[in-house]
Amino acid sequence: MDRCCLLVIVSIGWTIGAIDASEGDADPRYRWVCFDLTEKLDYSSTLALLGFSLILAVLRTFNVKNEASRVMVAAPLLAFLTTHILYLNFYELDYGLNMKVCITMGIAQLLFWAVWAGITHHPSRFKIWAIVIGGAMAILLELYDYPPYKCYVDSHALWHATNIPLAYLWWSFVYEDAKFRTSAIMKKSR
Image (cartoon, rainbow, N blue to C red):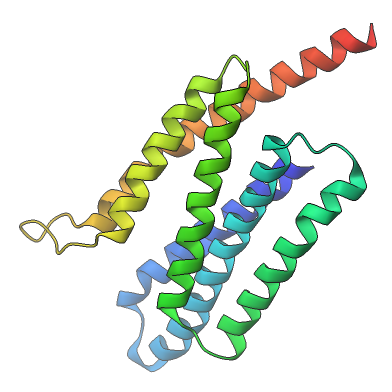
């Protein structure tokens, strides 16, 4: 169920991001409406994805299995995310604040996954290490924005490009992890 929700959130985020990026060609009469709406949707979907991923990272790192404990971990994070999304959508669309929140959640996720990869004996832990290192490099590209090199590639474009192999590594880890955990459960049930 958790992975299905994550897939839906990622798909919505990519779709909204694509619409937001293509607005340069929009009819000028509708540009201000589309820009405001898609910018809010872009920020909101990014926050939802980062927040849900952070909750999963915390639950996995600390191996939280009790349902009440999961709620105690998730509830404050969900409350913060909901409040922040409402603030952005209905009070002030603050790019700087949103970047700080997203970067903080991204770094926190990387730290949680680095801890998990360091203490586990999971057969795919090296993929997580690659994701942590690649994710840290990607965050640096997002933080240290520089103008396009010879009008072709800037840091934001490289950030998007680095997310392609990171996404592949992540989903291959998720697949191998599902097989590993399923086989462990099957062995216990015998």
